[in-house]
Amino acid sequence: MFFRPVGQFSVPAAVGEPGPGITPAAPNLGDAAPVVALLDGLPIENHVLLAGRLVVDDPDNWTVDYPAGDRQHGTAMASLIAHGDLGTEQTPIDSRIYVRPIMRPDSRDWHVPRLEAIPRDVIPADLIHRAVRRMFEGDGNHTAAAPSVRVVNVSIGDSAHPYDRIVSPFARVIDWLSWRYRVLFIISAGNQLTNLPLNLTRGEWLALNADERAERVFRALVMTAHVRRLLSPAESINALTVGALHEDESGDPIEPHRVNPYNASGFPSPINAVGSGFRRSVKPELLCEGGRQLYSINPNNGGGAVSLLPESLQHRPPGQRAASPGPTGDVTRTRYTRGTSNAAAAATRHAVAVSEMLDEIAPPIDDAFVPVAMKCLLTHSSAWSGAVDLLENVIKEMNPDSNIREQKSRFMGYGRIDVDRVLACTTSRVTIIGFGDIRNGEGHVYRVPLPPGLSGIVGRRRLTVTIAWFSPINPLHRNYRRAGVWFEAPESRDLQLDRLQCDWRAVQRGTVQHEIFEGERAIAFIDGANIRIKVNCREDAGPLLDGVPYALAVSLEVAEALAVPVYEEVRVRLNIPVPIRPAQPPI
Image 1: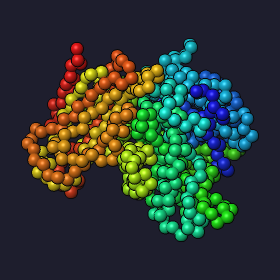
Image 2: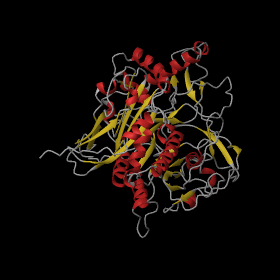
Image 3: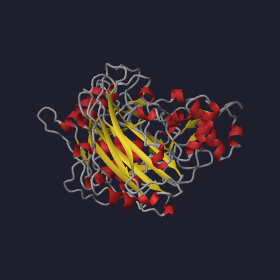
Image 4: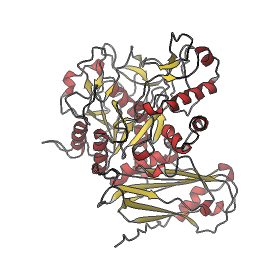
């Protein structure tokens, strides 16, 4: 289980010279404690984009053998978390990033810069266990290095260990650490930089329009999905796994000889690793901007079928612009990059925004439940884009007897993150958050007031319900996940809604259940009516002796044209807190 034929958990080095320089404003972070931990390669600490923004903890003293020119991946990830895509004007986060290097340059690599990888004489599961324990408990004579951390970014994957039914040791230790310390891990799904067979000649491909090309790319992805699986540790059940969207803000024109597989937004990146997760759970759960990956058509095919070859020139646009080591020690340089690592960094940045929002609401959420609430709200903000319609048509034609919804979720997860939906409510949308510990056999009942102004109104209304939890694990049991937590779908008569998007069974196999209900039919109800949502818990892989931390988010929204003040009407009816009434466990 531990020995693999190639270097473990490596990331490719950048190719070519970095892009243009940049000079940001000096940070003023005061004594803000780190909320984010980055487990990656070592970044350039004095880069103008990162100076004063990092807390680097290097107990193994890898810095002495880590030249500045090799510090590619960690520098880019730290930049994307702190600033986002430099092609946009985003506000930097207000806290420092705790950095623990878990990769270093591979001494066997003769390229410049060298490949960054976990050293050959280190077991990855042991390394990440020591790193996270040091953060929260300390190590030897050292006290806890970063006990304030709520989210840990792991944007690496093992190309020699794709997920195949058995959870990898690296993923298992992440699941245990997430449960032990109640911390959220955000992991990249992994990049699959393999060719896309088109089953078309070069002339036939060039004759296609943009929509037809996108359909052909989807066909190739569906046909090769079995060899494009998640890379360890992306199958972790307690972590949020993030795939990339084929989007960025570089805005640069693309040369005719470079192939852009999708010209529209909302499409999953063609280099994404494809789910599902353990026991066919929804993986990756989320999609986030990861830059546009371009391709070229393979030459010298002799007039036969061609394939698309992914470009490897990471310094050129399009892509997301991030900090980069300069070729001669220049600390103002940047470059363009893309992939699921970028998407995980962007999702981590969104998690920080959610964390700040949770600290500001009143009454405040218990600090121990903030990480699981972040996990819940990030997922709660997501939904499928219009790209799923094209994917559905392809799946129906190629695999008509399959579960179409489950197949779509392998590529789309729960959809793209739209964090603004959970950072603030609107007149026509209200979001309610609940949290607690639940034990085996218990049931917590939540009642969400219905706005009386909606009674008898015909028009679009949507109910989104999400529950997330951290489950203890039992590696000796085939079910692995000790705690199964789920909510019962609201009765259809409450709002006359239909279930959308993911398969209702698949959403209950992981540690996040996210469901969307929508309808337009008019219903009549009296003031004081409510939607009843019951949260349940059962043991799933042996005895469950501990309480399971969970968070629940419920959003009700209506079309703005209906002019129903949903937020205000629900807020008034929640002035008296709705009690949680746990059922007594069976004797």
